[in-house]
Structures are given as C-alpha cells and as structure tokens.
Amino acid sequence: MCNVELNKYSKTLTKDPTQPATQAMFYGIGFEEEDFDKAQIGIASMGYDGNTCNMHLNGLAEIVKKGVKEQNLVGLMFHTIGISDGMTNGTDGMRYSLVSRDIIADSIEAVCAGQYYDGLITVPGCDKNMPGSLMAMARLDRPSIMVYGGSIAPGHYKAQDLNIVSAFEALGNKIAGKISDEDFKGVIKNSCPSAGACGGMYTANTMASAIEALGMSLPYSSSYPALSKEKKEECKFAGHYVKILLEKDIKPSDIMTPKAFENALRLIMILGGSTNAVLHFIAIAKSIGYDLTLDDFQKISDETPFLADLKPSGKYLMEDLHNVGGVPAVMKYLLDLGLLHGDCLTVTGKTIAENLEHVTSIIDRQQNIIHDIKDPIKATGHIRILYGNLAEKGSVAKITGKEGDYFKGTAIVFDGEKEFIKGIEDKKIQEGNVVVIKNEGPKGAPGMPEMLKPTSALMGSGLGKNVALITDGRFSGGTHGFVVGHITPEAFAGGLIGLIKDGDVIELDADKNTINALLSDEEIAKRKAEFQQPDYKVKRGVLYKYAKSVADASQGCVTDL
Image (tube, rainbow, N blue to C red; front, top):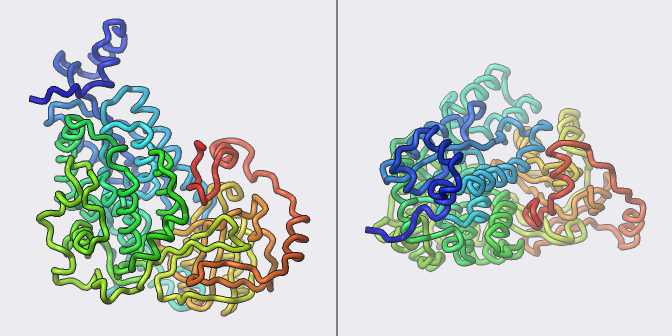
C-alpha cells in the first residue's frame, strides 16, 4: 500500500470541519462518503465545436475522466478556451491567437489553485492550447500530464494529399490564375476531412512532439492520430500514470529540467519544427523558473542536423510517421546517437531511456521520412536566430536548406498583412524583393498574428522562391520559404523594421546569422529621431490588457514578468 498522502491539496476543502458549505456542495455534485478521502484530478478540456483541431476533445476528456475514476481518484472536468489559428489567419481574429495561450494558462492555474486540485491532466488540440497547458502546470507544480488531441488525417482531391496549408496556398494559385474555380473549391472542401490538429510538422505537432521529448506527455502521445484507437487508449491510461505521479510525488519541476529542455529543442531541430516553438518554450521555461534564451536555440541548432522530410517543406505528414514507429522511434535513434539525455524523468515515472528500452530505432525500420544522420537534409538546424540593425534583440528564421542561406534585395514595405494581400493582388511584388510587413508585433498588432496567409499567397503565386519576407509578426508552422519573423524591437517600439522605406537594401545571411538594412548610421539615427510611438490600436478589453503587459518576442511574449 502507498503511504503517501495523495489528497494533500484537496483535503483543504474535503476534510476541514470548518468548511461545511464546501462539503455540502461536494455532496451536491454526487460525492459519496469515500470520495472525500480521494485525490482530486482537474481535467482541463480545450474542446469546442468550432474547430477541427478541438471538436473531439470533450469526448477524449470523458475517457480520461473514466480512466481517472478506475484508479480510485476523482476526476473533475473543466473547460478553457481555444482560438483556431487555421480559421483566423488573415483576419483581425488572429490577434487573439497568441493572447489565448496566456488566457489558457491563467484559467487553468486559477481553477486548479482555487479548487485545490491535487493533480492535473490537460487535453489540448490547436497549438496555443499546449504551451498554455504547460505554463499552468509549471506554475502549479503539481503532478500533471498533457494528453495531446492528435493530428488530422490527410484530405484527398484528384489524387493529391491535402492539408490546411493546401487551402491557404490555393489562394495564391487562384490569384496567379493557376487553378480553376472548380478545383479551388475542390481543394477547400477536401483539405480538412475530420477531427484533429494540422497534420504536418506545423506548430501543433511541433509542440506535441517537443513536449513528449520534454517528458510531460506519455510516449506516442504526439504521433497517435486524433481518431485512432491508440489515442483513446492513451486517454484511458492517463489516470494510471497520474496516480503514479501522485504516489511518487513527481512534479513538473522534477521533469522540466534544463536537460529536458535540451531534449525538446533537439527534437524540434531534428523534425524541422515551427518557429513558434521558440516563443512557447521560452515562455514555458520562464514559468518553471528556467531562463531559456534565443541563443540557446541557436546553440542547439548549430550542433543538430535537420533530418525529417515532413511538411511544410517536405513530403510526409505526422500520420506517416506514426505508421513507422512515431516520435518514440525517432527519440530512440537520437538516444542511440547520444543526442538525448536519457536520464531525464518523464510522466511515466520512468526516465526517457527506460521508456525507450524496447523501442526499435527509426533508422532500423523501412521508411523514408527520417534521414540517416550521415545523409541529413541540412547539416545544422533549420531555426536560425538572426541579429543586426534590423533585429538588435534578435529574430527567428526558418531555413530548411531549400531556400538558400543568403538573400539580398530591395525592400517593399506593407503596413500590416491586409495591405500586403492587396499588394500581391495588384502584382506590386517582384522577384528580388524583400517583403517587409510591419506593425504586426505583440504590442503593435496587438497580439503578434501569424503571417501564414501572406507566405502561402507568395508560394501559391510562384514568388515564394524568389523573394524574402521579414516581419515583427510570427509565422505558422505551415510557413515555408525564406522568411524571418519575431523581429525585436518591433515597429511599435521604434525598431528599425518600422522605419524601412521602399527601395532600401536589406541583407539576410542565415550562415552568419545576420539581418541588416544597408543604411548608414547617420541615416538610421535620423529616422529614429523622427519616430513617434503610435497609440495602441485598441483601447479596451483583452487586447488592450495584452498590449500593455506583454513582454517582447525575445522573452517569449509572456504577460507576467
């Protein structure tokens, strides 16, 4: 028998004789006498009807609740928000996406702390759900597990495999006259056939994979498809493992160590993951008390090859990886190469090495998704941290090797992505341009929206390989091309990106990790002297509060510094 007190938080409400009204309410929700001695597990579902990434999560959360009950624990479900990146990209609604990460973290923290839950299981889908979950887990520091909702199956149209990015890029094809109205509609109707998050190595799967490597989700969680029987089984077993965490008193602070973050970053580089991971992992690390920086990403990128032929820059989807062993098979290969810390603790109560003991390495399987380290897609990582007069505090580029490492061209400047979309419709952008989209930063937009619509339009129009794009906004994991985002300081704060004019020459070097406008110091000083900070674009509500409190992108856009 376990002698550890499992209900050390919930007993504040269930066992205190001076809390009769509280206990009356427990009877009201159906408690029996024996339930007052049980540990309580908060089950946070990010399920809602309006999004394929999240539409199935309430059903998965119900399975989690049953699994918790089978372990003689009390599972109490609650809900928090989600904002669909796929739906809101290209609209003002996208300003709320990154904001939602912190709302999710705040709401989970508030419910679990306020209700004295002893442990936490979250069931997230679309990508801000996941860092929001981890930030809350870190703040609470109680036994916790994340159960990823899983990725969507590919869509099909005229013998083509489709995903959400196919629909975005169809717009560029339409603008360029490369697709008929019938086929444009066909792509749209068939890109998202069922429940689940975007199927490529976009932000959702990047975060899910990295969180598995971090140790905060069960093995295979990131690669089980959303509607698979394996995903349902994972939900059921989450209760078993949260009980182990309670019995061993294993908390997020025991799992989310500096070495565990190295494991997560390593997997991001191997898989060619989303640039959004930079923002999110800096924020997660801050929540647990670890100072992860942009330079840490560059260090891992410098010593890690890019091996995965996954979309958006490659051929395959997460479901394909699942069919050849999933993320654990990749991690086993990295462990064998000495690229992972095998002694890091995980939510199974075991170490990474113990979890992978009986897993066959991906390199020993019949597959074409993960390259041999001797034959990498790119010898170093795809995420590059660029500094220069355009990004004194840093910027983030995604360079997979297909875009080249160097670009020099003349600026064409757009004040926000709407102005850019009109510009591409009017065919203002030419080969050799560096497209500058300003005033899309965390304070300036506000909310630092993704520029997936612009990059997809460039790709679809045929310009994607012949122009570069820089912005103080961020990118979707579905973005590809020579793009640089997270430019800090942002335009709103007087960053040089806001002072660039059409025709200025900009030089981007992902080998030297530099980003510069080729302007004299005198010209830069003159422009900065003329800068006047604009008013906030919103004057009330959540976006106003966010703009007033958010830290810059180099600090993860956290709101609690």
